[in-house]
Amino acid sequence: MSPRAAWRLESLGFTRVFDYVAGKQDWFAAGLPSEGKLAGRPRAGDLAQREVPTCGLAERVGDVHERVRAAGRDACVVVNAERIVLGVLRGKAWEHDPRTAAEQAMRSGPSTFRPNVPLEEIVGYLREHEMASAWITTSDGRLVGLMPREAAERALHEAHLAGAAARATKG
Image (cartoon, rainbow, N blue to C red; front, side, top):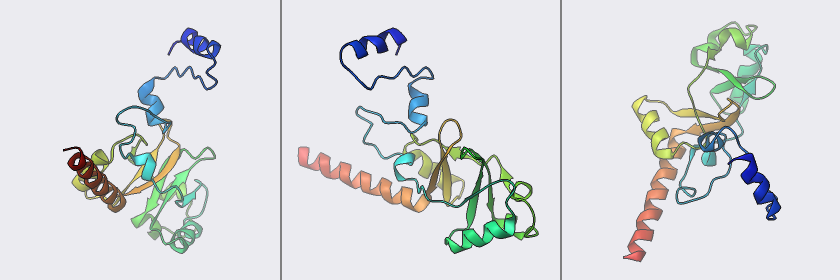
C-alpha cells in the first residue's frame, strides 16, 4: 500500500495502518497475520515448536550437548543475539571435543522454511529428503521454531478430515 493510502486510512479512523514496503509475500514470510480464503489453512508458523534448544557461537559443544540432552532433544540451533539462525549442532557435531566452540562444530546455513509455507509443501519436502524436521525462520532469518515432520503430517491429516467433513455437510 502506498504511504498516501495509509494516511487516508488513518484519516478515516483506522488505527492499525502499516506502510509495509517489502510487499505482501514478505509480510507473510515474516509470520505476520493474514486474511482471506487461505488464512485458515495450516501453515508452518502456526505449528512450529517455539521452545527449542539454542546456543551462541562461542558456547562449548560439551555444555550445549548436556543442555540439549536434558531437554530431551537431539539438535541445537546456533543463533546470534537477535535469534538469527547461523547453524545447527546435531549428529556428528556432538563427537567434537567438548571444549570446541559451537561455531567450529556446527553445520552452517541450514535449510529453513518461512512461517507462511503450507504444511503440504513442508511435508512433501521432509518426505522427499527423508528428514524428521525443519527449522522455521522469518524472512530475515529470525528463529520461529522447529516443525517436526510427524506433527506436520498429523495436522495436515486433521485439516483434510475437517475439510472433508465440511464438504459432506454442504452436500
